[in-house]
Length: 132
Image 1 (spheres, helix red, strand yellow):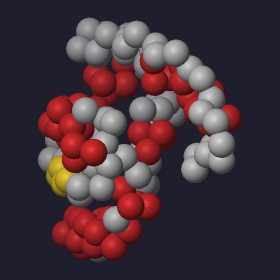
Image 2 (cartoon, one colour):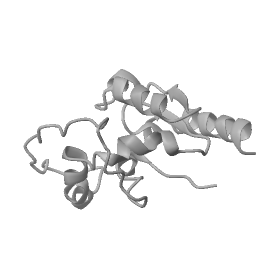
Image 3 (cartoon, one colour):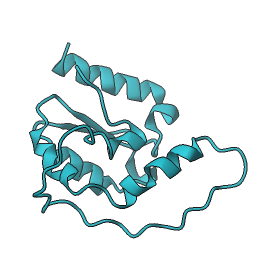
Image 4 (cartoon, helix red, strand yellow):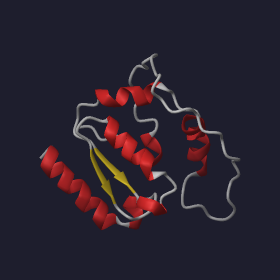
């Protein structure tokens, strides 16, 4: 079993696979928002933001095309309307992966931190149905 694609790593989780030059179905790059480090103590790693920013703003167009090639059972969890990730993108991700299961935990973006029990229950239920 291989688990990939947690929080920031979701967009880059296919980076270890060869690119499909056909990437015609990939989304257009989004216009980059100004990048300014927030003041005060941060609950996240700012260096990680800098490291992955290009992949978020201008992703490899082939990653979307490769989603239908995923054969492993896949659980896609969205954080609902409190998340800054548009939930229609979460739905689109799940729709493009054959047999993917989509769940929503109304917790915002950091689901595992905001609702750890719901996250664990949802994940374990999926694993029991799919893998175990």
